[in-house]
Length: 235
Image (cartoon, rainbow, N blue to C red; front, top):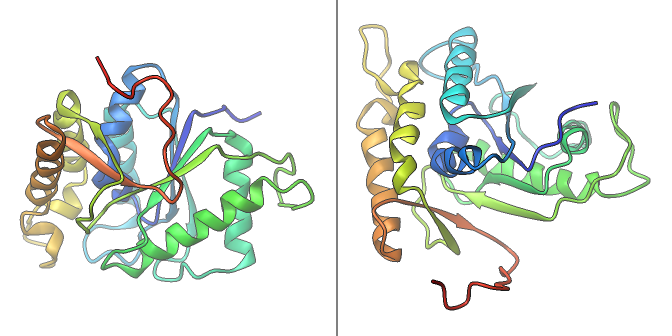
């Protein structure tokens, strides 16, 4: 029986989840919540690094954040198109780990894989809850309570934010674990990622923090309004 998770975050490639919500993961993991990350591809078409190195970096980042589970489905990089096979594999992950909340990249992003990942995950979340929907590994239905979307390359007005001021250093450490992606070396190819990308992410989280009166925050999108039960006024 697979470990049940409170949160399962999906990304198209290793480092997507960290860019969008590493601070939130570190914050919740330190509070005792079990967090899982599932990368849809091995990122085998990345301009820098290779599959073996990317996997090592991903595992290190997960360890730094206190992640309980990490997996890659090995779907084709630059081939994340809507089809039954991919939706079924993602639904299996959801059914095996039975998360309360699922995260995926926000649909609007310069990289098509990120938006396609969001669409696949949204389809899988719906299918995983259908009793008669069959998958190869787990046919026990599971209804996710909420699906939220984190930002990777984009800057969008968030629907809600999470204060990560105390966890920003962990986020930066997790991003720096991906040396093949964010550091310039003699072998690296010039890409947007090796040209101050981490600093750009840090600036974005600082801006989101400024919007809500904290030093750093991560912003998220949701299709369904959030219900406040007890914290309307706050402390």
